[in-house]
Image (tube, rainbow, N blue to C red):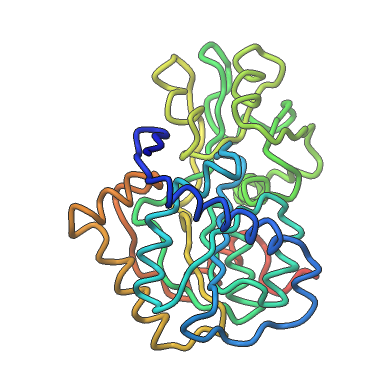
Length: 299
């Protein structure tokens, strides 16, 4: 018996295994499991890999399990122990669980949460995507706005309040002597809704992630990008300080080598990171938080 999904084929045994993993992962996502720091996992203990694709990704829990199945198998082989995939969408809960070292691994598009985990909770950078992402200011095609300086006094729609992109947009405006807190700003979770709102002139300016479908098609469809942020860390993978350094080193080597084999490139394509991963030092995370205006722990 075979099961086909999104062009991938999985055996019925694999599907049953994923269903069991889903039940474990659902339970693992609750804060009750993160009341105290977790002991270092042994070779036979489940290693929890939490995935957060942020507002740019709309995959449901089952889609996340299938998308990252082969990636988790690669990680399990490198780490010498079984890996459970956990899908995380709640930003506050994720940060609280990281604070309590409830997860061994985090792979996250919203980069400020893992950056804080590196700075404040002693998580260790493993790698991040080679292709950076940027925060973009978009306008509809016949907008009179030409540069970010023209945004002052206009209506702006951003992703969620205090999200990584909201913070990046705030930093971009700050660098251009505009205080976003004094501007007319509204927020929406869905970036497709942001693009639609700007296209239909409900707002003068929208803020989107360059990795989103809106950004990839905006200029193709006649819209304009009037500002792009500095390159930002994209999809960082970080590890808990509870994982022994030797195991982290093996995982880093395996992740960095994915783009060197056909099977590795297939994994990268499935998780939408075809360019592969690069080594990313701790200092890069700290510099990113400093640019956001968070030189010290904000809570």
